[in-house]
Structure formats: C-alpha cells, structure tokens
Image 1 (cartoon, rainbow, N blue to C red):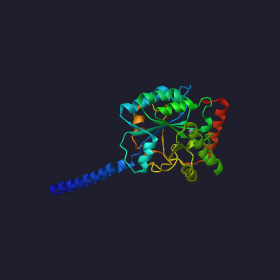
Image 2 (cartoon, rainbow, N blue to C red):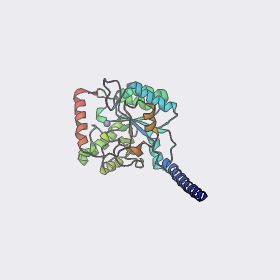
Image 3 (cartoon, rainbow, N blue to C red):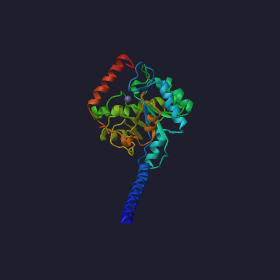
Image 4 (cartoon, rainbow, N blue to C red):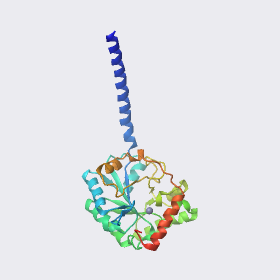
Length: 287
Ligand SMILES: [Zn+2]
C-alpha cells in the first residue's frame, strides 16, 4: 500500500518536473525573440539647479556612458539599427543606440567630449528653426560633431506637437525641416523624431513620403518590438537613473515588454508642449 502511494507520488513529481522543463524551455526560446535594441533618449545634459525630468547632470551622463563602456556595449548608429530591422537581421544583446532631442547647446559642451572620449556615435534630433538660437546648437557646432561621427536628425521646424496641426502644416514641419537641415549640413537627413512622441498613422505616412528612412517616438505607440521603423520606441534616461540596477533593467533589451503602452496622439499633450515652446522663446532655454 505504502509502495503504491510512493509510486504515485513519484509519477506526479515526474510529470510536474517535465511540465516545468517544457515551459522553461519554451520561455527560453520565446524570450530572445522579444529582444529589442534599446534606443536611449536624452534631452538636456546640464546642471540647472533642481534637475528636471528631461535633464541629466554631466556627471551622471558620464557615468551612464562609462557603464556602457565597462559592460562592453556595442553602440550602434541609428542607421545601422534601422537597416538591421529592415533586413530582419538579429542584433546581439548589448547593442544600443544613443539619441538626444531638441539640440540644446549643452549637447556640445557636456555630451560631445564624453562621446568623443568613448568613440560612441549618437543622433541628435534638432528643430531647424531653433538652430543658432540662444541655448541651442549652432551650425558650426553641429558640423564639428558630424565630423566625429554624430548624426543630425530632424525634430520638425518649430518643435510643435504634430497631431494638433493641419495636414499642410504637418507637411511643412516634416519636409521643411529636412530640406533646411540638408541645405545647411550638406548631407541627407534620414531620421526624424516626433516632438513629444506625438504621431498618427497619417503623420507616419507623411514622414515616409518626405523621404526619411525611419522615425523615433518616445514611449508612445503600441509597437513594443520596434518592428515598425517609423514608430521606434525609445527608453528615457533621467537624472534619477543613478543606480546600476536601473541601468541594467533599462538596457536589457526586454524593458519594452513591461512598459505601459501610451497613446501616440493624446491631444492634451500638445498644449503643454506648445506652451513650453513659447516660454522657451520668451525666456531662453532652461526656464
Ligand atoms: Zn523635443
């Protein structure tokens, strides 16, 4: 009797372990297919009193870059990532892309020396009407950075929230900025970033139609796996990313799996961004 019970227990254990092994095996096969190369997103890198959400101190930024170097990350150009996605090519873990939005002058003073030191490429998305304005990158600075492997992308002409505009205005922002940047910089401007991450399917069409090869959003949109190169999700880095485990988590390539999906064109967002833009025009940056 006791022996019978023992045998039955053994059989249950055997079945249980087998199920676990199959599930674990399936998970291990499934997980790599969810890997997404993280696209890091920064804005200001500066000391500006109490640090805002979009500002990282120069020391912290240097620490982030040192982390990438120490852990042997392969820092790719955005173009290399987009080509790989288009061709369905697998990129190994520890690949990463670095991007900056808005084209603040501190990207030259605080970011450029660090990127040069580590030989990391990056893309800076600039709004073409803001170039050479106080607090923003000058054309000469952009040229110098490009000579050292930085790419310049478009972030519209006036940093406006695109879903709020008429289609004609959207076209002017999307095409106009590309044309102006290309005239000034003398190279094709292949990538675009939606201000505030705001886009619609029609705006994506307009960006594609204008001749861009791809576009970045923020954490907006519903494509967790970055299969659509006109809707590339990025990972925001802030001054709060001051611990090794935060960096590790954001850089694993599986961060998107656990993020809340955000509406790509929530209209209330526009007023905030436009308001910020107006304040910036009146008061200069960092206000
Ligand atoms: Zn922006």
